[in-house]
Structure formats: C-alpha cells, structure tokens
Length: 183
Length: 139
Image (cartoon, rainbow over the protein chains, first blue to last red):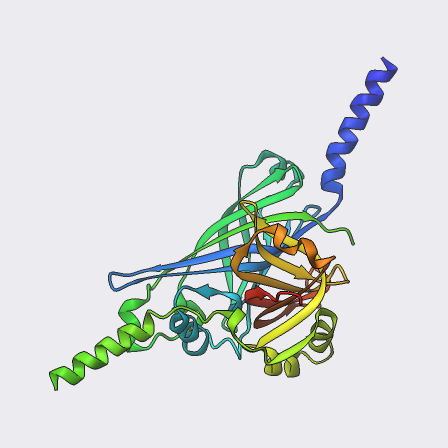
C-alpha cells in the first residue's frame, strides 16, 4: 500500500512538474499568410517567429520580423517590404495576450482556446481576439491558430494599381512547437 | 504603339515572375562571427539594422541547433550563448550528414532580416535572423 502511494505521488509529481516549469518557447514558429483574389494568389511564410507561453498565467507572446517573410517571387517580397509594410520603419509585428478562462487543465485537455490581446503591425496596435489550440506534447506544447488580418485596420495602404491583386482580408496561420524555457 | 505596350507587358510579366538569386553564388558584404553580429545589434540596434539588414552576411560560429523537417536540415542556429543567437533559414534543404565534418563550427551566408529581441518580452536575449541561407563549404 505504501509503495502504491509513493508510485502514485511520483506520477502526479511528474505530470504537475511539466506545467510547473512555467514558460515554453520557440524561435522557429511558422507564420503563413495567404491572400486570394481573382487576379492572383499571394502566399508568404516566416519560419522564425518567436513565441512564448507562460503556463502559470496563460500569457502568450508572438513576434516576427517582417523582413523574414519569404515570397516565391523576389519582386513581390520587395513590394511587400518597401511599399506596403514599410519594414525599415516598422521592422516587426508582435502579439501579446492572454488565454481566456485560463487554467492548466485547459492545456492538458487540448480543447480550443480563445486568446485576447494586443496586435502590433505596421506601427498600429489593435485589440484582437483569435481562436487557437494548444496541445501538450511529449517534448513541450503545440500551439496553432488562424485568424484574419485586414490591411486597412493597420493603415497599410495598397496602391490603386495593385488593389485588385491583394485581398481585403488576409488569412494568417500560426503553428509553433514550444519547448521548456530553462532560465 | 501596340507593340510597345505588348513589350512592356511582357517585360513586366517576366520581371514579376523572377525568383530569388542563389545566395551561394553571391558575394558577402560583411564577414564576421555569430557573437560579433549579435553584439553589434545588442550594442546599437539602429546602427546595426541600417548596416546589415538586406545585406548578404557571412557568419561563422558554433552550431547550437539544427532545425529539421522530414530528415532534412531547413534551418541552422549559431551561438555560444543559449539566448543570443543567429538563426538562419536555408535556401535549399541539406542532408544533416553534409555538416558531419564541421566539428561543431560552420560558416553560413544569408540575407540579414534584422534583430528580434525585446526587453519587455518573456523571452530573454535576441536573435539575428538570416533568410535564404547557404552553408559555405570549408576549405
């Protein structure tokens, strides 16, 4: 009996210690965006997003360098940086938020979560909400989300000549596998 | 007039369909170690951003981590410090065995995208990011 209590206690301790580690992070998060219009589809990806999740509080952070987005066509990447995102002036996009109705059980369940916070793109900060999913995995946490960004909400001006080539609503997908932050 | 318009349209179509240059065939504007470029951004971020961003930089340093997908290397992190690193995305994936002879140190060349780090962030340190990276063969 005493032995069973010890084993159960050890198991409970090992499970709780996973969450007790606090923060999880990655510097290799993936962010894709996709613009679909009858004129053309534009697909870009960034595989260097940083993401941090604090499992004690449910706080979440994302950050990407705008210049780290890669496009298939060189000219498209140049226009994205110079004409639309003005990435020399506004080099990064960030999100800082909080998982709603957070509890550690929520992470263990793998159920969808709602995240609320402040998104900063092109120097404009807006309150946003996004649905997501956070699953506990063997080596950490897997975080996924998809949401819509409207360029006009962030004062991103699209010239008339290419207005029909760029969607008014851009679909953004985030996928990040986080590992424990040991510091 | 029609011919000129047609030629203009064709030139434009050709120009917009162009891919990226091969980094391995391009000359680096700057050559330095991973610690040197990270320190440059940490010491004066604005000056380093103006100097290195959009430039081809050649960086040498210890491999901290290889990012893999389907058994191939898609990214390389260089650093002797766990939290201040150079993080590069490869232009072409490579087999991990291609780095077997590196003895833990490697030289890479890529387009600098800038520095990602924030004192207010929960994540300590910062990252110099490179895209379209090529591994420079050791002589």
